[in-house]
Image (cartoon, rainbow, N blue to C red; front, top):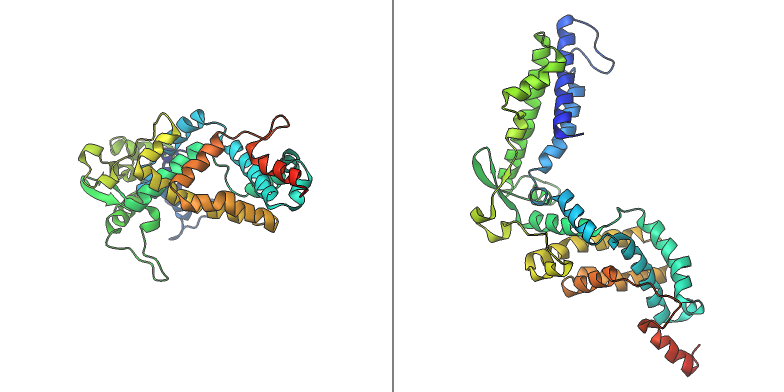
Amino acid sequence: MTVYEVEEAALTMAAAIGQRRRKALSPHPGNNQGRDALNDALMLEAFGGHFLTDSFSAGHQQTERASVKEYWDLKIPQFGSNFQSWLAQSIVMYLRKRGGAARAVTPQWARDRIAMPSVQAAMAKIPKLSFGDVVSDALHAYFNKYGAEVEVNGRKITLVGDSRLLSKGPQRHVTDESRDTFDAAAAAVRAGIEEVYQAAEMGRQGEDPERVAVKIFNAGSGLFAAEELLPKLTPNASVVDPRHKSLDWQLTSYQDFFDDPRFAEGFDISLKKYAGMVSGSLAGLPADQMEAVEEVLSKPLRAGGKSIRKLFDQVIDYKPISGGGVDPDLLPDLSDLRSGKY
């Protein structure tokens, strides 16, 4: 459902409840005639309010998630599948270098019959990651940390990220830094709630519930009250703090991201978090495979910078070990064969 459809549904429901009050008819089951009569309409309004308040998060405001995903998923469509295949193969190659049972079978067999099914089953617990997701998560993480300059109802403020709205610790509260963000979001939520009560009163006055939302919408110059209070992103030319300027994500190559230290920092922040998610989802793997995951994936993600760029190169350029030729990673195995270690 779109924001308009949610608001329209909430106002229509409120108007219908108001109309039932006017006619003194029994309400729909679940609604009361007393002070709780609007609960259903207010719950629907709260559902829309969740997405409304996302607009007041710096990370959401600066991340065109759908557009970023479409652009980069078209440029690097194989990233998600490559990532799982690369991880399975990397686990096998790490274990082969450690010696033991992993060397008793070919790396192709171990990858396809042991490592890959385990990786796929474990990673089904978390969302599949496309390269568009990686880029949008980096944008979101960077601006959640540093903020975004916007204008709300004619006033210029700096939004904070959703993780910075409240202080840390058991006694969480709005901070001096987040006060403007909190107040602006709360004002938009209140405006939506007030329209629910307005719709109920219009229904009580005899207005057709099916027409109430349209009348309120048109009275607001084509916007609902909450929409009029949505933040408008400040153009880069007018941004005061350079850390708040929008980042250009429509680049020619993924490697160009690392020429911008702000994007590199965004990757560092978001992928450290992803490292924890992956490690958690793979926790059911045998201990030796978990050790391999730590070495080939988690450590590089936590290290950031050049390690992340190298990991991107490996995943995007992933080539499965095949039966033909010799993979460079297998050369130590041949040396062991000649020395009689097998």
